[in-house]
Image 1: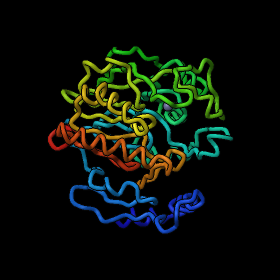
Image 2: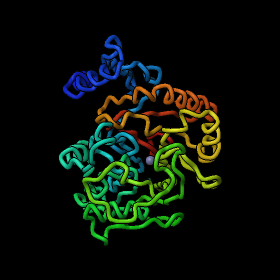
Image 3: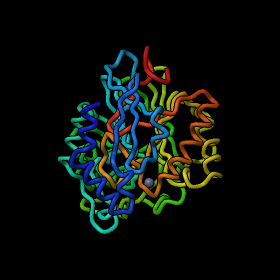
Length: 355
Ligand SMILES: [Zn+2]
């Protein structure tokens, strides 16, 4: 744990605290504290605002070697996931570059290649041959073209995502449009793209497409949603569902089951109890996962670290959503497993979760 302690006190941690103080959060609660690890790889922490300490017992980080049949999922913050069975790697969403709120509002966005290289190296992403993008808002697609170029991967996406790829110089031969419902075999994985819907109440979440190749630097508002998609990822008899945005199409998941579910819980899910109940019934209750990992809860205007925080304005919404999920998942004996930045979870096989 000493490395985590020193990292939380490093340059980026200090910068984070001072920015939060500037935002009016009291110095008395601004110190990031990492408490010693309990058994089983669980971490306990207090965030600068103290908001997530109640969830310390749920946090998961499992960096051990994979057994045959197991799948590692590494969380790169927001909704970016690296899925790896030891042979084949899949990347879901590609948002790694740091984009501050000021830059998102007033500046232009471009991939920070050095940052992306560093992060891909840190998480061992050296076999990525396929990238799937949930929708074309910048906090999902910003680095997709660079990652595809650097790794030689095929970029799968909506017409909007393919325009992001084109604008970023990905060759046409490595751009593949979605054919929802048609399974794609990749190594021992089968990925099925499912039509979905963006979380309500989000600016530009109405499906408006990007109609021309989008080159960087670009404005945040140039990254139009262009439709939203979920991904059913099967590995032998096991499966996980990746659902980046907390929206749903009525009936779309009626026949979809997955052992594990990685799901965005931003937007209306935290704010609106009525939406939360409807979302649960249309998604989690149908998928019936044994394990649920929330995504899109960290403050994505801040650099991803292994000690994530929520946006201070979203603390109450995140807590409301998580408390609801914990109650519901407890009722179905499913595990709630939030993850820190760059942490991993091992699924399936002889000793993984959700087996
Ligand atoms: Zn979005």
